[in-house]
Amino acid sequence: QIEQRIEPAKRAAHSVSKRLQACLQGPCGSEMDKRVKKLPLMALSMAMAESFKELDTESSLGKALEMGCCIQSSLAKIVAEFEIALEHYVLQPLNKLSEEELPIILKRKKTLQKLISDWNTIKSRLNQAAKSSSNSTGAGVGPGASSAANKLEILKEE
Image (cartoon, rainbow, N blue to C red; front, side, top):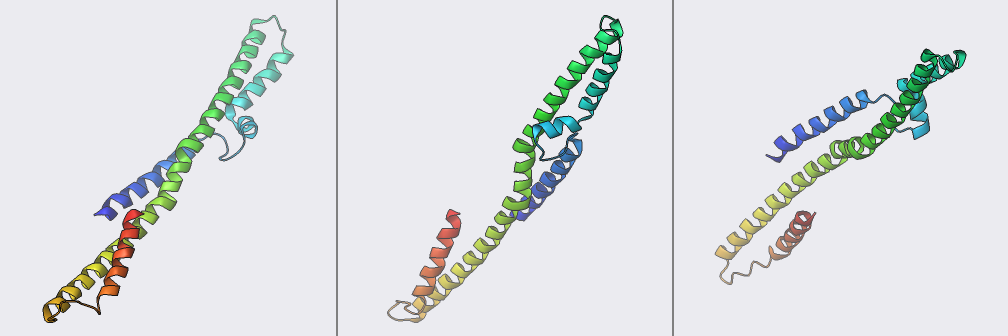
């Protein structure tokens, strides 16, 4: 039952992570300055800056290019900040979930199932020994039962 929940969650986390990474305009994991320089908005800002320098500063086209340059530069910085935050708060946790945490949950679930099975086997043997023994001590099964019970409790706590 848990596998039926974990596998779709793992696939969803992986798929969403890939799609989000494809949407990023800047290179993943880079610093702010490097990311801003590689954004298309910054390239447009630089082209506008070069163009308005060649024009008369009082011309309407020169003023429009200068204003556009500033706006594009600001937008590039905002996009870079957003992408860095997206990587930190969304992509990294998604990757950690799908690559590390969900496989650990599945592994622990299998271990828990095995320990429960061992516990039930030992309990059954103890009950059989108690029925067949007149003193009902079950001395040969006791240490195994306590060991299995300890393992089971440790795994439940995790």
